[in-house]
Length: 453
Ligand code: UD1
Image 1: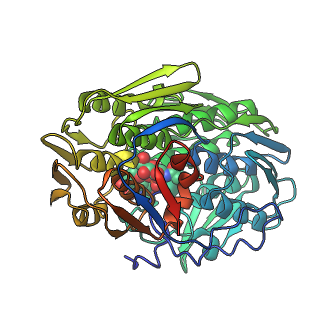
Image 2: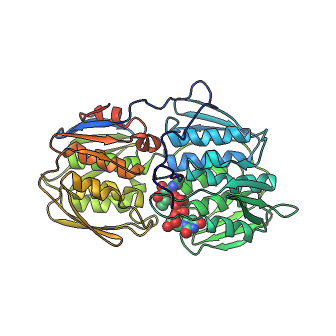
Image 3: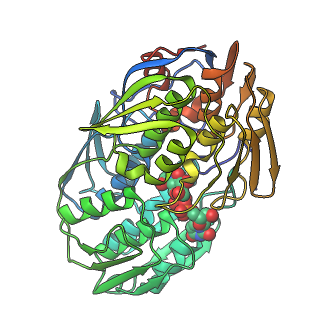
């Protein structure tokens, strides 16, 4: 496993702040802040409205799907200011795509691809870039993609991505840290692929690869996340023939070519859940604009048990705390529709001040409790035993200087800071900038005493 600073995977893990040059991007590129810390003075209740951004974990995959067609692809509600989105744009431009973005609009054209190689220097920044493998191989018959490295939240192999492509007839050779894949003459062949374990990324890579394969592909034990459904719906608009989205068996009939389309990225359910917990912990009432309650059902049950009221009102969600002190609740992370691993750290932050205890069990990633020592430094009472943590609620957290090693761990510390006595300083905010658009502006806008330093 690599050291934290060398860490290379995307999603919810850490990477070096210096790894993103961003210098190949167009002038409208949002610049990373030179401010590296967030300071929070805890104690303010939250009142007002927070706009929810498009889902990072969907937008990154939709960008890869553009490699399946030579026509223009137009996206709305795209979280373009995120670092991860910038890394993905950098990769697509390296491959030869034309990429333009303004506000939350994003246009990509992959009509003039120059290379089928996704180099280490770009892939190491973010695991989501492995998702170019299926589309490149399917449309062009070959792809060379750097293997992502180790990561802070677990070993995270890509064996299921590779095995699935081999079952579709591809020849895959791993050499010098690269996946070298070639499709058979005439292109990838439809296949029945049974995933030994539920994987979001492997389902998405194989789903995209199968759209242009010969014949029918069946993905069994597929992941059911809303982001995969959204990706599939965009592929259908592009002309793909797909059924079974949102179930554990997805069926794809390959077509000869795909067309460009318009697509609006679904709201980010993890950002939504994070702000629900913020309001539940801090108290007050907030409205989350353009948010979907239906994608958070497993979380909502636990939030309601804890004492947080959440209701849908048109396209918005209204959140309020029902009781003075929240209740301790047990959670266990599972593939969708179970409790999302990407909400585990935030829920643990909530439990730190609950009445009574709650047990948090992590079943998806083996090393995802790095926020525990930092929360304990703020006065929390958490004990880890294997893949479970017992969180005994305390009356009051105390502000402290803290540092996190991944995206969701960082935001858990921000949540704790909102209710801690005194000042909390969260270091290394580049983690947050990977997955939360303008978190300081959004929380500050509803009354939190939070600023960058
Ligand atoms: C995606 C999300 C991430 C989320 C995770 C689980 C993106 C960009 N990231 O990550 O935020 O935390 O889903 O909901 O969408 N595995 C294998 N072999 C493989 C692939 C995965 O063993 O080939 C294992 C992983 O190590 C892990 C489990 O399967 O233990 C689930 O991982 P997976 O669903 O693939 O996560 P990602 O797609 O990487």
